[in-house]
Amino acid sequence: MPEDSTICAISTPAGTGGIAVIRLSGKSAIAIVDIIFRSPAQGKNLADQPANTLHFGTIHQDKTLLDEVVIGLFRTPHSYTGEDVVEISCHGSQYIQQQILQLLIDCGAMLALPGEFTQRAFLHGKMDLSQAEAVADLISSGNAAAHRVALNQMRGGFSAEIKLLRDQLLHFITLVELELDFSEEDVEFADRTQLIALSRKVESLLQKLANSFSLGNAIKNGIPVAIIGDTNVGKSTLLNALLNEEKAIVSEIHGTTRDVIEDVVNLNGVLFRFFDTAGLRETTDSIERMGIERSYRKLEQAMVILLVLDLTSPNDSILSRILEIRNKIDSQKLILVANKSDLVTDKVRNELAALPLKSNESLVFVAAKSKENLTGLIRVMQDSVSVDKVQPEDVIVTNIRHYEALTKALEAIQRTITGLESNLSGEFLSQDIRECLYYLGSITGHISTDEVLGNIFKNFCIGK
Ligand SMILES: Nc1nc2c(ncn2[C@@H]2O[C@H](COP(=O)(O)OP(=O)(O)OP(=O)(O)O)[C@@H](O)[C@H]2O)c(=O)[nH]1
Ligand SMILES: [Mg+2]
Image (cartoon, rainbow, N blue to C red; front, side):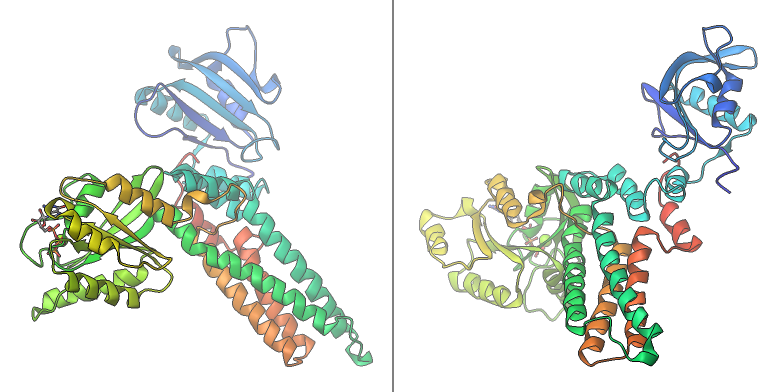
C-alpha cells in the first residue's frame, strides 16, 4: 500500500553529472533522512523544519563523511506525490549516489518501481491519469511541438475537455434515468430533440479529438514522409542527404533499394520520419515486386509524399509518373522533387516548372548528391504540415490508449443518436450513454483497473 511504505530512487539520469537528485516519498521520508543527515546547526532536525525549505548539511556513512548535500523538504499534501517528499541533491558521482541510496534502504526506505512517484501522485488525486501519462511524454519530448502538446496535457487541457464531455453526458443520463424511475406515469423529462442536439455536440467534440490523433501521433513519432519515385532517380541519395548520414545504399544500378528504409530526424525543430522505398518500375523479379507493393503502401500511410523525379529522364515518363501518383493520393501533401538539377539546362527545368500544380502540391528543384537546395525542400516540407502551428492551448491526442477510448466512446454516442432517432426506450439509451461515460472515465482514470495502471506506469523510468 502506498500509504505505508516510503520509496526512494535516483531521479536524475544514470551517469555522472554535476549534481544528482535522490528522491524519497512517504510517511517516513523525513524521519529516514534525519537518520543520515547532519546539519551544521547543532541539534537541528529536518522533522522540525517547515515545508518547502532547503537545508545544507552532510551525509555520513557510519562515522565517515560521504558528501555535502542540500535537502529539499516538502510536506503532504503540497508535494509532487501528495506525500511527504525529500529531495537530496548530492554531488554527481555514481559512487556517492549509490551509497546514499543504500543508506536510505538500510534505514527503511524501499526502492521505487518505475513511475511509482507519478503513480502515487495519481492515487493521491494530484493529477488524473491522462496528466500522469503526459509526464512521461513531457520527459521524452524531443521537439517543440511534442513539448507544447505534452505540457498542455500535463497541465490539464485534455482532462478539462474530457470533463466537459462527461458533465454533459451525466446531465443527459440523469434526465433519461429519472424518466425510467417514473416509467409507470409515462412522463418524458428529457426532451428528445434536445437530447439529440446534445448527443450531436458530444459526437462532434469526440470526433474532433479522435481526428487530432494522426497529427498527435506525427508530433510524437515524427511526420511520416514517403520518398517515392522511379528507380535510380536519387531517392536514397535524398534520404541520406536529409539524414546527413549514409543510411541507404546508393548506386547507379536500377532497383538498388528493395525494402523500406526508415529513419527519424529533427529538421529545424520538427520531427520527420522518412521512408525510402523501392523504385517503381515494371519487373518480373518477385522480390522486387514485393518491395514495390510496400512502396505503394507507404504512399498511402504517409502525410507527406516526396515524389522524386530525375530531370534527365524523358519528359513524358516524368509526366506519366506524376499523373499516376496524383491519382493515388487524396488529402496528402505531394511535393515534386525535381532531382539532378546539376545535370540539366534551364530549358528542361522551365518545362517542368510550367506544369500546373494542384493546391496540395509543390515543386522543388534540388540536386540531392551535392545537397543543393535541400534547405528549400525542408522549408516546403515544414510549410506543408501544421505541426509547428500547434498552439499551447490546442488539445491534441497523442496517446494510443486515449485514441482507442475516444473511438469506443464515439461509437457509443453514435448508437445513442441512432437510438434517439428511432425512439428507443430509455433503458437502452442509458446503457449506451453509460458505455460512453465509461470510456471517457477510463482516459482520466475515474475508472481504472490495476492492470491498466500497471501497464501505464511500468513504461516510466525509475525515479519519476
Ligand atoms: N548528378 C547527380 N547524380 C545524382 C543525384 N542524385 C542521385 N544521383 C545519382 O543517381 C544514382 C541513383 O541514386 P540512388 O539514390 O541510388 O537512386 P534511387 O532512387 O534510390 O534508386 P533505386 O533504389 O534503385 O530505386 C546514383 O548514382 C547517384 O549518385 C544528383 O542530384 N545529381
Ligand atoms: Mg534507392
